[in-house]
Image 1 (cartoon, rainbow, N blue to C red):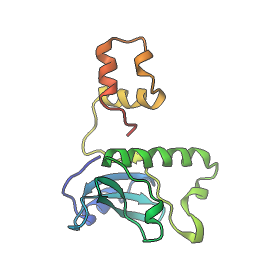
Image 2 (cartoon, one colour):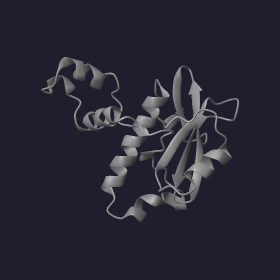
Image 3 (cartoon, rainbow, N blue to C red):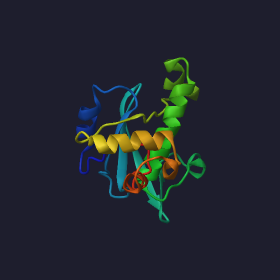
Image 4 (spheres, rainbow, N blue to C red):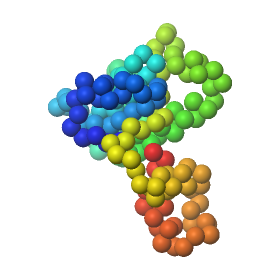
Length: 157
């Protein structure tokens, strides 16, 4: 789901016919930022810059909200957090329209489906599925080699 050097217009074209919640990570076209998340929202494709300050990553936002946003040691941790948050929000909403807009008619960001540059291997997809179900991989009745494989990538996205 990391696309590298991609413009905002190219990201928009890639996401245009995707369902809400589909996203990709790309290099930011603005010099002050390293990365941007491009995501399909209920209002169409949008871009969110990722800020890097003092060794931490967080989403860029308006001044009043910035202090409230969580910070992460890596971009993958940031994306993984917001994917998990979006999936739990998505499951909690019985009416899909209830999540589509926030207070004052603002569009709520959902990151639920990564747009891969290529199809991940079955091995990797299985690892993600197992890691979503348990954090106790060391208790699974599988060979140690497979346990090591599972713990080498502990993210859910």
